[in-house]
Image (cartoon, rainbow, N blue to C red; front, side, top):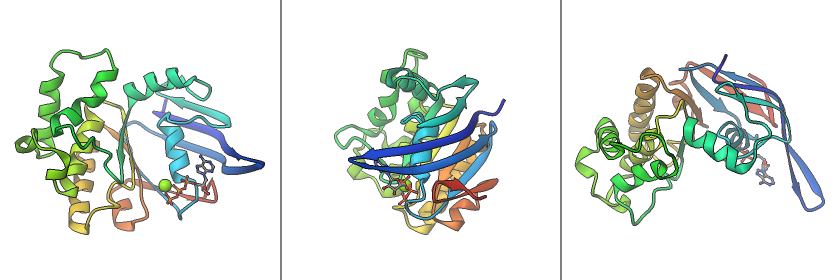
Length: 222
Ligand SMILES: Nc1ncnc2c1ncn2[C@@H]1O[C@H](COP(=O)(O)OP(=O)(O)OP(=O)(O)O)[C@@H](O)[C@H]1O
Ligand SMILES: [Mg+2]
């Protein structure tokens, strides 16, 4: 079984009297350990799709199987359990807690799960070493460069040992050299066995992926 299997996924938002159909009949399959890029113009539905893949939202209709479990119709509580177990998120704006240290930021997702209660601080430190920030663990986010902040976010995304790393425009705030470093880091995580899905507008970023999925007006055009 693939890690993610989507069949005939549709998503409609109801705003006031208007229904907006944002995703139309999406069929998508992600194999374990793949590195895939999603590209498409602004408003084409990329983030909406990623939110469903990441169990932050549910489809209006269709079937979504993640890690052998059908998740299309789960409640918010059930989804958050699945999310904490299987998914790590990286965002364009990093979303670090400003008053928490680098180490505390990385530890944050571990507060919500039961497994691996022992040594999680050591695991967080090990991850920070892996992303090259061992010397910065007591720093606050505003004492770091943008690229360093994104490295913290990547360590945080990995701390619960997810199967799938989802990154929505992870290099959108970074200069091209720093973007390259971040993409090399995501590639390394992929080499270590993580499935990586990156949303990007940038052809250079998509070039790191093994394949690119094109989305247009809520439909995959490949
Ligand atoms: N919660 C919502 N309620 C109503 N409409 C929404 C909602 N979320 C997204 N949309 C609409 O869905 C469409 C797709 O939005 P989405 O954020 O998925 O696009 P995107 O491809 O990620 O764009 P960008 O590249 O600008 O990030 C947009 O037209 C947007 O207005
Ligand atoms: Mg988006």
